Image (cartoon, rainbow, N blue to C red; front, side):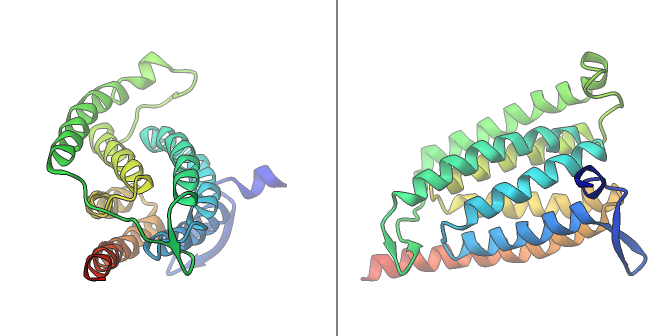
Length: 218
């Protein structure tokens, strides 16, 4: 029964001609909830996010977005770390209060690492079906584009766990690329999700900036 529900082919309902699987729908709802919680600086974002990550990991493997599949393993570890770090942060009415900007040299370092690792990851993922055919039996789709969104997401997740406001800028770029990528892969609901996430990321950036401004003005 559980394996049936987790199959991308098990359709919960159809919306505007698009067949919505149970795994895609539940993962999407939980993911949106976790993003809303993180924009509000609420610690509950981490356990909710972990559940959504597990569901998306299964979904991405089934549609052969292998970089995204591996990415979810990182998210689980980063979410556990973020949960631990945020739990130790000072709070006001349940919201963490010590969000901050990165130093300029940190920004340059993260951008450089993101670009270099993305190139190497894309090269590897474009050949992963020949290197590990048992695990990845078919050629990866859009390996370089998929890789750069993966590495950018890695950076964003780590920066978010560190409560750095630049994480939202990374998420905005990832969302913009994701809107196109998932539409082309015919996972149209996730493409629509990324439109919503783009709006939420912009809102999260503004909310965190306001939190910093309010703290400075106190």
